[in-house]
Amino acid sequence: MEVDTRVVGSIEAGLMVLAGLVEGDAEADLTWAAEKLANLRIFEDEQGKMNRSVLDTRGGILLVPNFTLAGEAVKGRRPSFDRAMKPEVAGPMFARLAELLRAAGAPTQTGVFRAHMVVTLVNDGPVTILLDTAERAR
Image 1 (cartoon, helix red, strand yellow):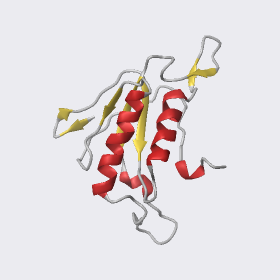
Image 2: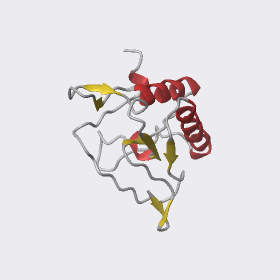
Image 3: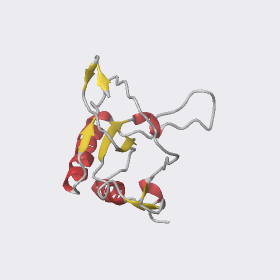
């Protein structure tokens, strides 16, 4: 991941996490997300089953701030970002999520909040998962 042609974050194997914070997200949401991301069993074991977490594989997490995930494009032709958390609140919340991931034992590299980033991904496998803290009560 680069900002102004300078590498600011990089991992080998692991997870690339696009993190979008929305109004109403709280510390409990960050704690849940960090625990879930560190322990989600989505990597194959010796039998080819998704049974290992990023902690089990000693992988890393590349945490990318991405407010556009809060976009809603159901109506009209231009997405609305009204649900996105205000940057002055979202910045510290994003930093806190990185801190919680590291505390869970997951080596975590981050992008630069509010910067124009060039993010490169080599997707080695078919797994893409959406985690929405608003859905966790279900």
